[in-house]
Every structure is written in C-alpha cells, then in structure tokens.
Length: 428
Ligand code: HOZ
Image (cartoon, rainbow, N blue to C red; front, side, top):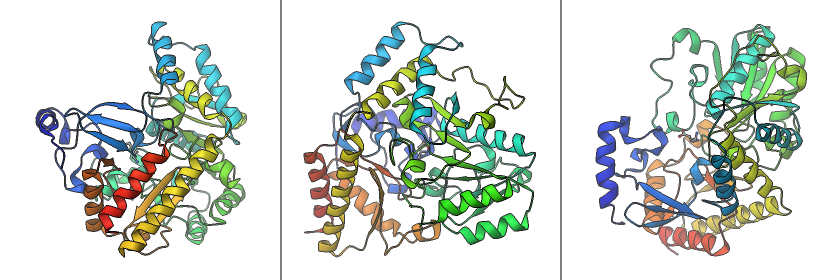
C-alpha cells in the first residue's frame, strides 16, 4: 500500500474537527476497511494526487461532475475570468440566463429552470413544488434511490445511507417519513397498487431514471413509460432526479436516452462542472407557481453563483463538441467488456451494469434490477477488489453502492491500466 503518512496526519486532525473526519459520509472509507483515506492535494486530467505525492487514476470524478476530467484548462480559465469580475452579487447575472437557456435547449422536458446550490436542494424544492401544485402530501420513491438528504427522502435511501446501513435517519420525524412510500425499483405493479391504495393522496413520484446510488441500476423496458402513464392518469407529478444522469446518460440526460418526459427534472453535478450549482425545472406553467412569480417559496443566497455558473457553462460547451458522447460510450463499453473478460478468466462471478460512462461492478450473478439484487453483491469481495485496485493506483468509489464515473480525460492507456489492474486482482 502507498505511503500515507501525511494523509494520516491530516486525517487524525480532521477526526477531531469534523464528524468522521469528513464533510460528507461517502468520503469516509469505513466500507472498504481502509483508514486513513488519502487526503487529496490536487487533480489533473484523469488523475488525482494525494498529500503524500501518490498518484491515482480517478473514477470518482468528484462523484460525477467532472465529466471532462480534473482542472481542465478551459473550465479553470472560465472560473478565473468570472472570479476576477466578482464572486457573487445576490442579483441576476447574464451567465445564469445563458446557463438556463442551455439547460432548456438540451433537456427535453425543460422550458424553465430555477438554479439552486445542490442536488439535495433541487430535489427538496421540486417536491415542495409538487406538493404545492397538487395540494397533496405523499410521495413515492424507490428503494435504493437517493435524492439528497432532505427529510422526505431519507427512507430506504441509497448512497452513503445504504453504504452505512442506516435504514432511515434519526432526526427525521416519523410523521414526515410516513408520507414517503418507498417501493422496489423497476416494479411498476407495486407502484400501481400503492397509487390505488392512496388514491388522490400522492403528490409526486420521484425516480432516478438511471439509478446511480445503489450502484448503477438501469430502468427495465416499460418502467419509466409506465410511471409516465400512471402519473398522467392520476394527476401525479413525475420527477426525474437526473442529478447523476443529467448530461451523463446522454446530452439530454436519461429522459433523452429513454425518450420519457417527466413533469419536473432535478439536475446538479455536471451542470456546474465541479462547483456548487444545481437546478430544477419543467414546463413553463409547472414552474410559474415558484416565488416570486407564484406563492411556492424557495430561495438561496448562493443560487446561480456566477463563478459556479461559469464552470458549468464552460463544461457544457465542451460537451457540445461533436462526438463527446460517442467517445464516452466507447470508453464505457470497452472497460465493461474488459472487466467482464478479466473476471471470466479469473473465475470471478460479477455483473456489470452500465449506462454510457456510468458503471458499477457487482460481485454476484445478475441481473441486478433493484436494491434487493444489488444487496446480493458480496461486500467482502468488493472490499478485496477495491483494495487490490487501489494498491495499483486505481481510485474507485469506496462503496459497492456507488457508480464509477469515466471522463473524457480517461485515455486508452488509462483504461488499459485499469483493466490490467483488474486482471491482476483476479489472477490472469
Ligand atoms: N451523492 C453522491 C454519491 N452518490 C455524492 C455526494 C455525497 O453524498 O457526498
């Protein structure tokens, strides 16, 4: 294992100052049995470098935003230029209008957006809008999907909650949690049944159209279409949480890939290129009730921050170049095929779920279609694999229940090095 003397020193100090030594639970490496996690000093292209000078090929990508790679010169230049004009004004800037325009042009269901600061805020605000618009209180979500840490969503949630095996969270009032029904992903019948049982009470169904927080799980044919139809019939607001899949599953997000339009869409991560901006939006009449054009309140000092908006605009403009999504698809497909081949040669039973440049390797027989399936993955084998890859300089998400993020900066040699490391772990 790499020398982590400086990481150890910093992490010990961090433990005395921040819960678990981190500012978000998924950054703790408890699930992979390693401490300290490397403390990161910098990133460049496909690599990150820790405070001890170790270099890693990075498949975390800041948990999704860095689809171009780290410290990409055109994004850095845009940030520097915006910062030189001021860090924030608490007033509308042209960049926000430009970003809103780009989002509306790219994402099929959007006519109007509100920029916020995080994915949590986007989902929380979309749910408030759905409740305000319908006058109903209940929401349906899916087991293993994660929509940020607002009270209504910490029920059978994915991501860090799943990694840490916390079923809900103390601090969420039972009365609030009771308004959330969590159902198995990809189980349309369960949704139909719940909607019938709670007729006229469901404000919204929120779903990750490509689930990324129980590991990657793809929607089965007909699932998203079925949700769309049911929501039409019952006047329920369909919310796609595309914080991960937006500009990742395709330029227009999963809704473009699967050709299903939700009523509201939540975006984050890539739309701000690594800085904090997120968004929710929908058709004009859906969004008009949001204050100040309507009564449904939602606000934020840092909303649409000009520096973050500049990073987002530079990132999205780079993604608009011809062939970017074809390249991402190719990289993802190549890596998937090599991982499957290496596992087969080494006699390791795995299942790879992938949507473009987003993938998860489960240590079980497939298919993996929902949380129950994902939980069949052998966590000991995951841990061994993670540690074996890290020892060869491959930095994977430190949880079975997260996605690997491939970026445009991952070159052929990077992917070959990753496949070679997997072959080494599994034995040739
Ligand atoms: N939600 C992301 C993982 N699925 C990362 C953000 C976090 O929880 O730190």
